[in-house]
Length: 358
Image (cartoon, rainbow, N blue to C red; front, side, top):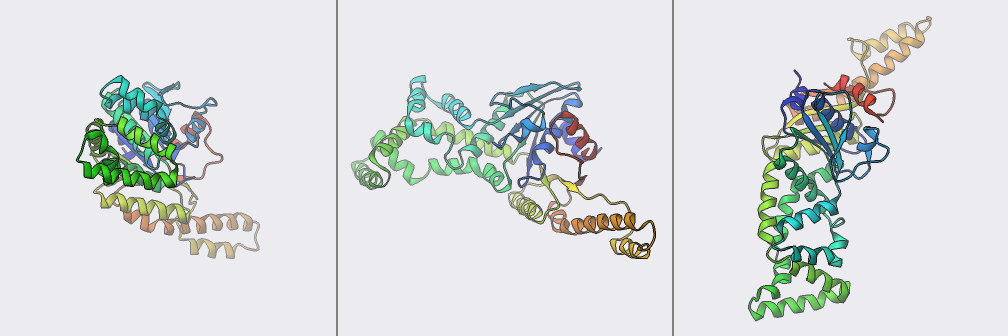
């Protein structure tokens, strides 16, 4: 049994990561689909707003923030969803608000409505929050997360810690100071700071921001505690990272960077999937194949020998490009998926991809 087969049959959480355009979303969809085929209840969650997951599943009407069941030829269940940052943020606020009135004050605040889906890091943290929620609910045997392109995926890993750092930041404490009745000296400092900021962003924007943070009063501990649990889940042994790349130099460089960053955090890549590889048709080294091509140059076999040599040269070049990446993910297995005739746009395409991957 391959490592990927083992993951789809026994894993709890799989996170796929890689640069854009390497087949990361389709890889995530295949893993969730094969888990359903093995009799499990799986869900694939995309953080990428490009709607590639819906396209890969053949869904013309798209996906939403709620899991949608995908019908198919499997014993288990396959579900899919696309993260809606604002809806997830609303649910988190409702969970931690001390009263429904406090939650309503936040929902109605213009600053909150503007930043809930757009603030830097919000999407990544809410994705981690959704992952934690799905894991804790235990409705699914396997949760597969399709992350945004690689460096955003690193934001995904760091998001819980960044939220905790924000709640401990001096700026946040200054904004909250008047609400908490701190000493007058702190209030004076706060007012001076706010007057300066208002000249830059405008008094209306600042008033909304201050009202938002003060409506947030009393919820920090809940957010801080939750972010700690979310962060722990991302590095837990129940969470497996599958790195996805293509033989392109830039994709390999991105994947190598991500693998090294994971290693710095004590996280081992469980498997590397390299899509769109040129197939090899000969066991001979490329230089022997090109030598044979030259020998057949004036024969009827020349066109075939030329094509074979081109494939072997491309395949050997790709193998060389992957050397550093293989070293970075060692001892994780490397799964090489050949170039397919067409892009994946439905379940049949996912089936074909699965035959090469597992």
